[in-house]
Image (cartoon, rainbow, N blue to C red):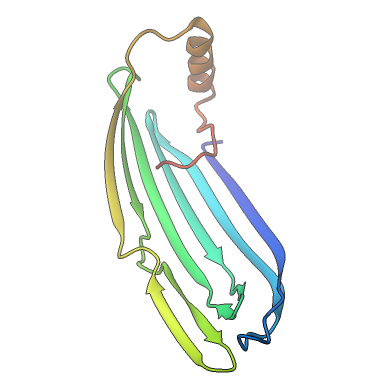
Length: 157
């Protein structure tokens, strides 16, 4: 009950006409990407999230891109009697978020690779909620506490 998993898959077919005038051939194909998110309650007031993202090779106007994988992780701690939270998250944990591929026309062929995100990126966030909660918000909070279950599915960012 304290862990939740969510998977997403996206796919599309892409078609490029090309141009004889510029020596660009037509190109088409199926593109897809997927991600898996795991949310979990570690202890009362402490939750964690791990997210893996994969992008398969993609068809581009003048070639194809290479596949890309990256992962993010985060921790969230409720503080100050649930009026605040401290979040720590790291994006691109394994420093694998790189975009690359091949481009080709009648005039040239080239390979390229760029860092999508330069190295892992860590963030520490402190949030504080001012004011009183509306009665329906308080009831929702109590229901969630009683379930002792990490609700949501949204990303910690």
